[in-house]
Image (cartoon, rainbow, N blue to C red):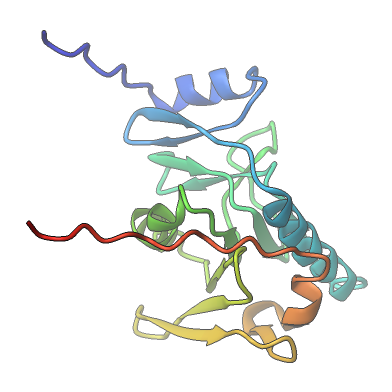
Length: 201
């Protein structure tokens, strides 16, 4: 039996549907992808990071946003909901609704088993298309580990990993330093089950 053709939405159709929807969906190559709910650890890490940034930004023209704010990538070809995004200076939005951000300088994704490959691969490639993005942060939720990717002058990205409570996540573009102990405060780790390798017959 032939499979049904996939319906392709225009960016305008996606935004019209999304603004009326009861749940969030991301958009890529004409398709809409419903977002799954997060774990308590995922939510706690996101809240901790956004709260620390908000405190550090008092009296400064910088604003952290949580996962409810959409980010537009590459002139509407893709839309995503980062767990945390940061803008310093003027906030630029795609239209009068002011619900779709254009110019984040920092994007943070808290890794989940179902999305980690996407966050590290295609999604990272898409985020790189945002001209003003300077730092991309991947935060593990099953162990204390943060990976910071910094855009270099030649367009390449340099990765630094941190994994100790006394280590700092340093975001130079927004002049922010946060201890890992504070990012992971009240997080209960649930280690992933080990992968079982199949034996060759």
